[in-house]
Length: 94
Image (cartoon, rainbow, N blue to C red; front, side, top):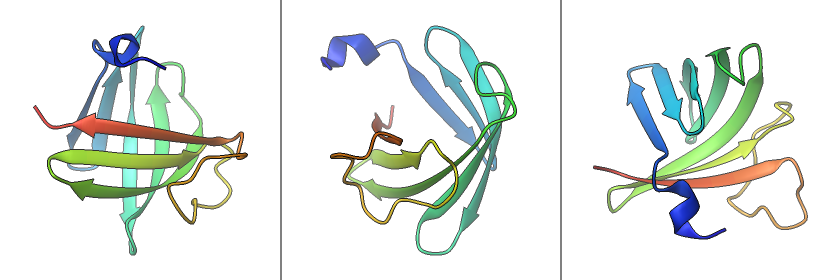
């Protein structure tokens, strides 16, 4: 998808809390574990009550997160090809 579709989106992470703003606002809690893994728990918004597993990396002021929307196991890599429940996002630090 073109970058222009995502220009108004933002992710703010403050300790273990996150706020994601797009068409609506989604808030929740992130729990970090070893090997750059995280569990994301939606509390308010479209993902309220949902649990996602993910992996992440930070490089050159960019946060890359690969989510497993099924929430059962974290992805093993940042590859989403042929993995319908995986979602890759790259966030640039402001």
